[in-house]
Image 1 (tube, rainbow, N blue to C red):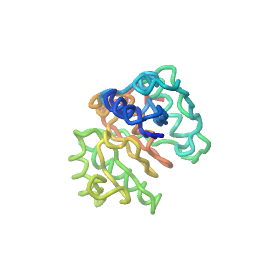
Image 2 (tube, rainbow, N blue to C red):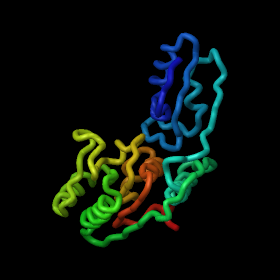
Image 3 (cartoon, one colour):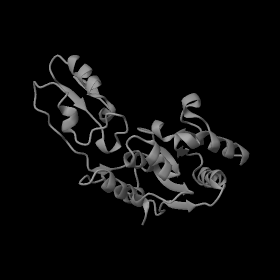
Length: 226
């Protein structure tokens, strides 16, 4: 038996490679097509199962309950998902934190300072938890400098792992990760830079287990407006 996680991000060729390694056709694939951000991102599971062994009919089991993401975040994520994949519903959250997502609009050159302030607040509130700043790739270097200047240096998880109090990473590396709090930076640019647009934003806002903040200078995408 073969088990494949994050199957929504495998290409058709990769899925066929998995299939060729199964003698019996017994394979379990796990994933969320709403969080597919690769160049081959499927919109439905039958686009995945068509590349799996035909010896057995595919049986789909949908998980409808979210134990990780609080209801306040799921409500925001649901609006994004409705725009990204009409007809698909987010899971139902089983808990509330009592704290809604925080939206911070900034003017001029204050983006980096605002991100540093919000991230520092989260680090202080949630210690010894983990906080991540998720940003478009084009802003990561600028934000790293801003965080250093503000006395809130952020770790690069690619070099230092995921245990630091504060991490900074481009959105395209966030899939499958989770943090106590997440600061999503400039969602309009994030949507523009990702091949999967709003689905990348959906991934970003569903990374926190406790707190979410969105810091932006540009207007928010419609999916994030009230």
